[in-house]
Structure formats: C-alpha cells, structure tokens
Length: 115
Length: 109
Image 1 (cartoon, chains in turn purple, yellow):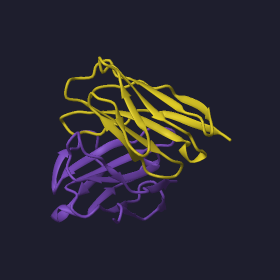
Image 2 (image 1 turned 60 degrees about the vertical axis):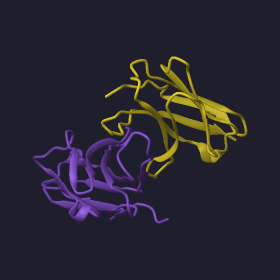
Image 3 (image 1 turned 90 degrees about the vertical axis):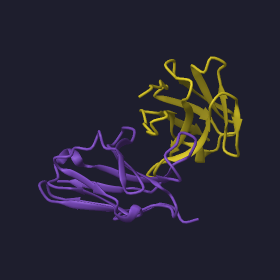
Image 4 (image 1 turned 135 degrees about the vertical axis):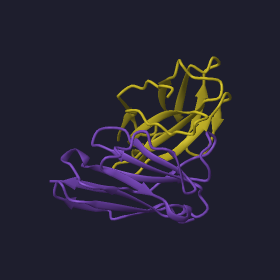
C-alpha cells in the first residue's frame, strides 16, 4: 500500500514570499489532516478535511494560510505571505474516516525554512 | 480537548522492557486512548489504541487502568530503533487527533 505522499521535502523561502505544499493521501481515505510541527514541539493540527469539506480549521491562521482539497483527494496548503515563525515541518496525514477508532497515516513532511 | 500528561523524557536499555506512562484524569467515557510515535526526521506513526481493555499488537501492549484515568504503553523488548518521541492522545468523538509534547525515549546500547 502506497503511503501519504508529500512534496516538496524541503523548501527555503524569504519572508513575505508565498509557498505551497502538496499532499496525496492514501487511496480511499476520506479524512485528510494538515499539521504544523515547530522544532521541539508536538504536531499542531491546522485543518482537517472530510472528503472535500472542512471539519475543523480553528487553528489555521486564516489571514495567511489557506488549504483546499479539490475532489476530495489531493490537497494543497498555502502560506501567503510567509513569516519567520512559519519555519516548521508541515505534515499531512490521512485516515479511512475521522472516527476515534481509526488510525492516521502520516507523510514524511515538508520542512519549510523562512529566512 | 481532553488532556494527557506524560514525562518529558525516559531512558532504557536495549532488550529490556519499557513502560511509558500517561495520565488522563479528565477522560470521558467515549474517549479512545491512542499512542503514536515519531522517529527522528519522520512523521508520526500509529502504535496502538484502546478503550477499556488491555490491547496487544506486534509493536506494543497497552495497559489501561480500571478507572481509565491512566494508561501505560509497554514495549516488551526495546531496540535502538524504538528511540523516538511517544505521544499519548485521547481521541474524542469530535474526531480530532491532538498531540501533546510526548515522551522522548532514549535507548542505550
């Protein structure tokens, strides 16, 4: 079974620039999550999709972050404009459904450095 | 979100059992207890989960206290590859998967 694919693996940008991350979840997985993990901290949930609808985006800084999941499959997360504090690993995960009895599968993440 | 409390770090020796504790005194009746671990430079991976009864799988065992206010992840025979950050998470009916700080496990050869 292919895992969750993310690209790019690494990205370096200057502050105020824009950046986008792409995620391809495991085939058939209805739920997709984006997390932000700052060095030394646990992952922080940014947004959760169920198919192509948003279930939770309470922690997403909506003035600069946006995410979409067209057709309920692939997803992109965008930051515009980036700030220094956005330097982190951005993790995508998927699960069959969002219930409490299912496991989530994570990609390897995209490491973003904002200089 | 229901909260969990874990030690910041633990250390053990290779080929010995490891018991990783987690306190969750505010757990509700429908919260599942999930454990994930994160190896260096990788995304988290699922380890095990349970509701009330103890659970075993090929990776670990999960022992849940009778009052469900605490649980213990047991690695029966630690290897160097088990060095990771281990997260104890309460999964609510709202479906969120919320990570805390976790326990950094060091395995000595």
